[in-house]
Every structure is written in C-alpha cells, then in structure tokens.
Image (tube, rainbow, N blue to C red; front, side, top):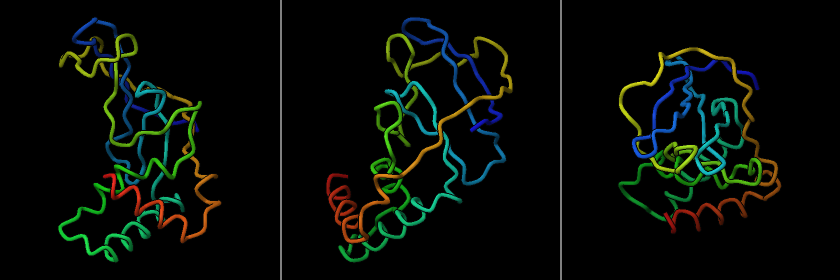
Length: 152
C-alpha cells in the first residue's frame, strides 16, 4: 500500500547512525503503523476496516468478562497480544507496542534534535494480514486469546 508519511531522521544516541522514523498524518483515525523485522521496518493496518481486529477486540472482551478480570484495560491488552492474530511479514512477527530500534546497533535511544528537517514522503508499506488467524474457529480463537491473556 502506498501512503504519504511524515519522515524524521534522527541519530542514534549510541552509535550516531542516522535512522528514519515514519509517522502517519496526525489527522488519521484508526490507522496504525506497526513494526516488524526486529523493530526496524514498518507495516500498515487500518483497524477500522480490519475485520480480524474488530473480531479480536470482541473475543478479548468476552474472555475478560468470562474470566471476571476486573480493572482490566481492554485496549492495552489488545495492543499487547493482537500481533498473534497477524501473519508474519518477511518471516518476522508484527509488533504493535514496540519501540523503534537503531538500524545498526539495535539501540532504542535517539537524539532529541532531528538530524534533518522533517519531510513528507510516499512509501510502499506491506499491509498486515490475518490469513492464518481467520482459519481458526471462534472457540479456537477464544482459547488462544485466553492463553495469551494469562501470559500477559
């Protein structure tokens, strides 16, 4: 999918490698960029149009209610475990709540001042899919979610 994204170039605080950070337009709603390839590449999902996401939220809510988990933030849990309903990209798991890593050393710390002015660029992004997840029955999906919540 081709998207217009905001681009920032920042230096790694450790090795000073210049890294590209991409962001959706601030006015987008329901769309997200997720990370893959060890936190170094981006993938796209429109959660408002994604049937698997809507189903996953509903099933997670059912599990939380049936397990009587009180004071549970549904969307924090979904953010942490939804990647299990996503197909791998280039052989790696999608990460929704991960931090961007340096392309060279893998560090998470970056300088606060941009290395170049912010720009808008057109980028081809892989779209997140759910082919494997959609093959499971609702009972299998709920069992997987129940297991993931226990690990959460």
